[in-house]
Length: 254
Length: 255
Image 1 (cartoon, one colour):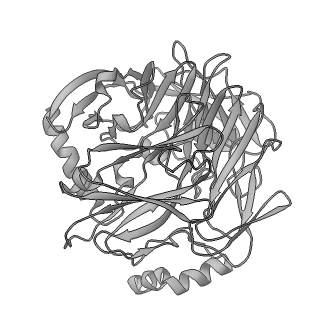
Image 2 (tube, helix red, strand yellow):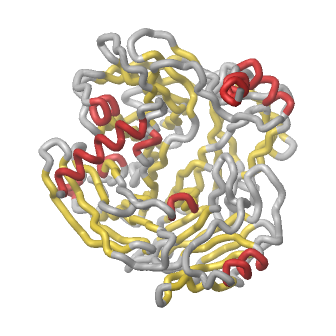
């Protein structure tokens, strides 16, 4: 099961185009679009009646940095309500496809540039704690007027817990920047130009998520996420190597 | 017994039969590739006032603490002719290459390129690396729109010159649908870029129109008037890169 999300800040808005079909099949109208957000330590669930056609849901007005969206049948949500929405559960496997089931997440400036990527947040990620490791200079642009990284975390329990994001020079082993961010939120972190260098990496402690880099220059936008490190190693030693590297970086922040 | 069954299922010949018959088809397989560097088929464009920025990491240094590795980049035309081979030594953790007309001796066109990590000396380690990398497309010197790698295409041994493809699998029949999960509305123009990551001929249809892509070749197709994009092909993983245009602004992402 995949979740979808949006982004909002002072200058950027976003819209989601969520398909009602798997990428090899016909559309299924029985799956409805729901919204979830944390409220008083429960997941508050709402059926959305946004604009749609037989193949897509279009989400625009309901987007903020706390809401997430998912496809489910009414029956599945009713069953979940019996558990009082105390934590996210894997409601169905409709969005478990290969290639991945994704929605188009587009950010835009009013009457100016736009940029998007095909996005998803797999249910399996909501169960995990851990850390993000992401090379800043791979997607941040030193020539742009503004650079941000939006860090999206969705965690199974309906809590907004603080955790830290660091910018670390992995060669000199220095912490250059630290900011507190929240679980179950699309967090905005501005990247100053001095941090867009080959040896500087973004690292989080305690919680994982998706780091999505945004550059803005003369009303043009670029928007893309970095790959998690385990996509770079395909051999059997992948988890050992990544865990060794993360341990080294953990030693710097501790 | 379970192990034996798994071994058989991973066997390439069995895989081909399963894919042919459509029984739990396997889109991609890395079985039996040994120690290797795997590359995507990365798109480059210098046509229509485009330049392409390529950002890649020194994976051998980052994960294995190997300081003296290097990378080879092979740039091919859309017809799979080798245009240029470039070697980069002295790598940083993150590196950048600008692909423009100047680099390609004035060529205004498009195609694919591959990156391979290389070692000077043989290694006992049996590692497989895949540099997924990031591509930025800038038109008319505006801000580059970045997108990450899309399709595992070729692999090369880390120390010798053995190069192979066919990680992505094909079928005999043109019966694999791929519906792009986005709605193409309110754009001035839309294009899709497709490349053949296999050594086989890829035949595909968009609506009623038939296309053929020979081994290693690539194509840009104008899809401006389509609200939805459905690609029917004999390839089990045939995902396009998409260029959407509105006014002076562009958006590039993999579909």
